[in-house]
Length: 427
Image (spheres, rainbow, N blue to C red):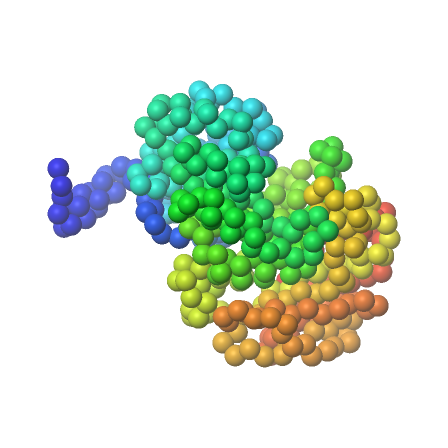
């Protein structure tokens, strides 16, 4: 039966007031998500979910991609907490099945999709629950069974291991694709949009979900992971590229993967994987979120000249020179062989949001200098300051406002090798 607009509005209101779950819908709207590692949430409280969702919403993020592994016994409790909390906060969620770190049966996937597809916080596109993955191209033929047993899904997987062309060869099995490639390759200092363009071409008009990340450094021998991806300008570069590519969706990688230094919040001790605390403790990334309201607004408007929610800046930097001591075996980029020290410069990187672009002042140990922007897009400008041969607290001043961050020192960290993670501060 076709309803007129007034009747539809009234029905929606009656359902909502009666407590009936109304899944969050999207049809053609640009949306921004953050990758959330549920595998790190064993024993997590509802209060933590509330804090994370509140913080994400305030940054302009529309929802979380809930990365889940099949082996985690806390999935049932934590997913229910997440969906319940998100439902009461008008925040979207969708399941992202980790098929690299675990094995899934069709029954397991079907059960979870069916359990949460009716939740008020479940993201739906064209009335189908949005579903994603981390890898799993060998599982591709199973999705037809999942569609049949769930009443259909809107599948946007990350099959980046196939490359854009390989993903395009499976176009009939997917509704869109997510590109995990959010960092420069090994031996590359910056990232370009070649891979993004290739995905858009291969998808032939189907939705593209673009990966965006502020940083990458991991040193976890138990997982044979020890590399740094060049991140000196990555947060600025990638958002500038978003405005060029204009993907249907964006997934920020990540909200809380501390082991890979890609997080955009203050580290939560209970979520830090063993061994990562040596390079995460004291390295707050909350300030990375400062630029999100502006860039997300610009992305959704398709125009960098949108109003600024607030003026200010984010600065990020390592707290030692890259060659202050050994590199700990950390290589430059995934699969690389050169030292990570070759893939980063001793610089303080700064993104300023301002209605009136201007020079800024940066002081290191009391020695200050005036710096001009090296690049700009819309109301965002990018600056870098070389800290070679300088030590002391870092103070960034923009339009009369100042913030002082942790000291840069020439002391080798207690691990005996360089920490390639960065601290982020907000002005």
